[in-house]
Image (cartoon, rainbow, N blue to C red):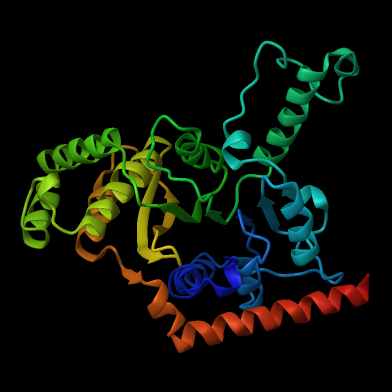
Length: 339
């Protein structure tokens, strides 16, 4: 099913991503937004932001500040034709985790595609050098103002590359003071080792921070993570605390969750989208932001739940999605005339 009919996903964009992005741009007085996304061929997120004036085209109708990652070769060409960034090289054809987690090995160390020696290596090494070139080009484009990490993979497996890629985002964003992160994942399966991590981190927080312990009793009626009755609340707390805030803290960032949204697709599969403002921490020893954000998550999240059927019947969402598609069609006609 394409995104055009995916109303529950658009409810998250409309009620979560868009207002947070507007507020972020206004708060930090950013005239231009540099945006990284893993959008699908319909590119609804890009055209939504462009329609609202968050993303801007130049006089030649090109989106100069949009970078896209997509692993499917056929989709890359369709996305390019739809979105029209300045160069095809602004769309990286590869899995995001492969590019963010890339490391030199003995065969690629000290070599790059511009090195005359690279013409003398075998096919496998040449392939590695092509990947290295692609990975370094993307890594050098960091930092971004807004990152839409929508990889369609379950991020709740600590040993998988997709989980490690999230940490790399916090590492590569080091040269900016603040950014907005949309972190998206299916939540139909939480592996046992992640549940143990959630449980242990929760227990550690309660013993270290009496403020969190107090709120936990008031809101959750328990200080035992396993006894939290609402599974969506449980997942929201685990993700926000043990994945986002924990990894951010490691790289001297502080977080504030503007929302954690749960939605379902037409197959009744449940997914999650966290909208997080990330700010450079000036004091590595300051834990007040962490306490505030964990309390915020416990008290208010998940922010909303959007069922597939309810979203289809949501006139505001249906109308907004139709208007974005109309806007996209208008823009595409305009740059066809420019070409």
